[in-house]
Length: 300
Image (tube, rainbow, N blue to C red):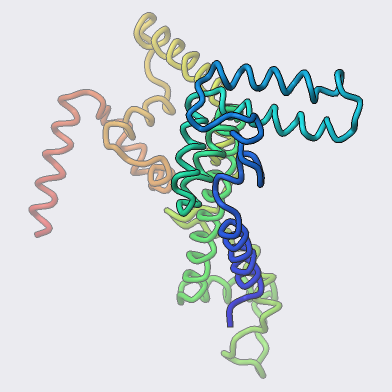
């Protein structure tokens, strides 16, 4: 059985479709009336005839000219019909809807695009698009993270870490009755919260990584990048100062094309050795690559 939400959405969609099919697609322009009949002109009338007919009816039904409350309703209909027929594009769409009433969805889409599409603020569209994409991005990252955590918790290595943490908390004393049986779920949940699981490729989602936040921080990021580039050029190109360990690490990581997360997880001794090799210099990089090729052949 389908969930209630799916059933209700299907019912609502069916009702909307039924309502559209009951009313002709051209009825969305002037409701149940004909726009040409409201102005008292034929469908072949030119723009001048349409304009004269509107001015004539406006003098008759305008609220300032006619105090009758019903005249206001008539004037609103006449004004709406004139707005549709005075513009060549909307008049053409209306004529097409009259000639092809069976094309319900196409005519309806053209109508709403003509009357509401150009009124939408592009900035609002951009903000809405960023929010929607950010929501999907966060949901996707969270799904990947929870799936990865679930898989890791099933591995023997994780269970061993959990058991070691339990022994540490209990002072190395184990329950003899329990023996090697699994710990209760509540204790497992409490201990698992203390284990920081960092899974490469499935990190815990962060709000700072969302597209909307990055877009808002774009001016700050660009200004920070420009400042960093200026300081780099001044320090190392103009003054000729030696590279700091952090900057040398950055150059080494860039030369080796190692992702930042992988570089952080690299052993400190290994990183220190790579930085001291000054791999950003062409000759040193060539020597390093030659050593790696020889090492690869030796292992084969």
